[in-house]
Length: 242
Image (cartoon, one colour):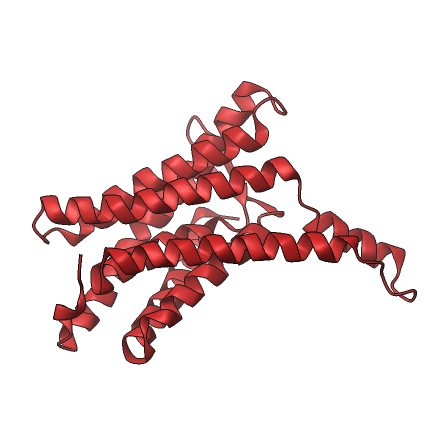
């Protein structure tokens, strides 16, 4: 996949998510929180497939999970929720996402244990188990990385909002997301793969995935401004409570 194609899909995904976040202004923050939780589950499921994106000097071909765009976009949602509704709602979104992932993992593990219908082919069953089979170490890595990085994002966003006295939206959006993405990438890959792959391979995976996430973080800034500008134009700016 070319980098330009990757950026196109990033913009398309972020555009859809921004539209949903704006719909929550009309129908309630629960919509944004629900979509956020759903995206965290979807990202973990489709992460089984690895994608290759362009080439970068020194790093070569960038490789990451197919869920990288979906998962990285969740940081945009928590930033929008935090800006519009306040930090407490951002924390509720993170907690909801964590609960959704726990339920998803338990449900998948149960489904894997159930006996298949007699007419289900061996190939179909093998494909199901290969895609949804969960390695305990990867699950633990995912949960730890999620809990720490997403919580950091909520607190960092409001830390920078306080320091800048509500100015420089681009700064708090990028400062919180870029650091949180680094925390997520380092924790997940280290916990999941250290000792399984050589150290240089682990470092290359961290660097490659983080470059992709940085690209997504940069692209999401205009969408953050679109969401906040629309919200302010509706005259509901007093709703946010930090």
